[in-house]
Image 1: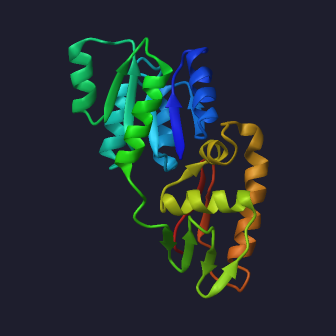
Image 2: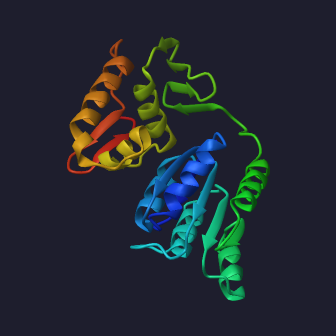
Length: 223
């Protein structure tokens, strides 16, 4: 299970991440609303834990924009704003739960478990685009009838592209998905992995579906 935490408190955020990782969840931590929205749209999280008073874009706006984009990922608000109006607003705009600070970590864990149970099993494990299929359970990748062997990073890159067909993905977004960091220092590395992936996908002369959008990033799109 993969969880996104959006929390700008320099002590609380890392503490929550450590605690949930000790409970065997995969956890990503971001510290501002714009980044939370970006990775929340790009990566299929099982749960998003959102602070409300985030820099650049507040948690309410992040939640509304995710729901506007038809993202159904469970959202848990975690906030010092404990008034009734704030709690009602959070639930009305699409959050699934609202926990006020301060809180006991055991209660947060219990709410996380409840939301993940509510999410239920994924209905399908297969992603398809054009003649490419990817099984998220077995990590089997095929183009037509041809089986393709990918490294773990190549697989993560292809999965991200296939979950966002037609969307231009920035190098920062790709870095966040593959290394849990957003940095331009990885731009050249990402370009290398794109080249590796293209080579394997087009090994038998098939058309290239990964397009370079200069100055922006990459896009999975049919020719």
